[in-house]
Amino acid sequence: MKKVLTLLALVLLTGQTVLAQDVRTELAADYSASESKLAAMAGALNADQLAWRPGEGVRSSAEVLNHVAGANYFLPTMIGCAVPEAADAPHSFGDMQAYDTVTDVAVIQSRIAGSFEHLRSCAAGLSDEKLANGMEWFGMSGSGQAFMYFLAGHTSEHVGQLIAYLRVNGVVPPWSS
Image 1 (cartoon, helix red, strand yellow):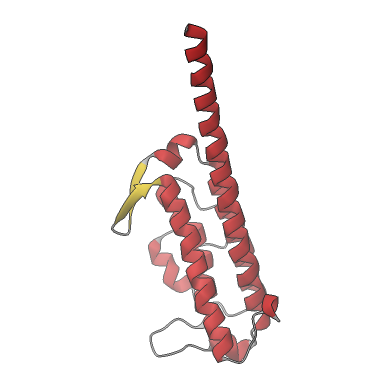
Image 2: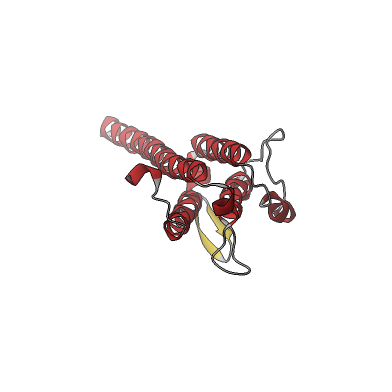
């Protein structure tokens, strides 16, 4: 009986580790899907389209792209993933506004690439405990895993926003042409 219980415990513990690894893999895939679309959209916009905004007080296309990159770098600090010191990234909430002002496509694309690499690295490095622990963010609460999926949702939300911006400006999203 003792051997059966020990074997069962091993199977359950191993299953949890495999499940957690699958979550990290799923997160990386979600992040990569958003990254490729955002980078493609940044490259499809000219200077006027990058500066376009749907209304006063609403982010321009360039500001949305920079916002996503900045959030990808800074928001993971809430779960313990530090912003890389050498990164062209905001290191505080106060830095986020100034970060949004860049309009050079090459800089934006570099920021997008670096920020998504940071997100994937953060997710890959989170312990099972960090993923399971409860936390709070922006008036919400849940597990670390829920937070990391929140970040995936945040990037996807802005993919959709930029698709609308492209369409309004007569640009077909590159992957759908």
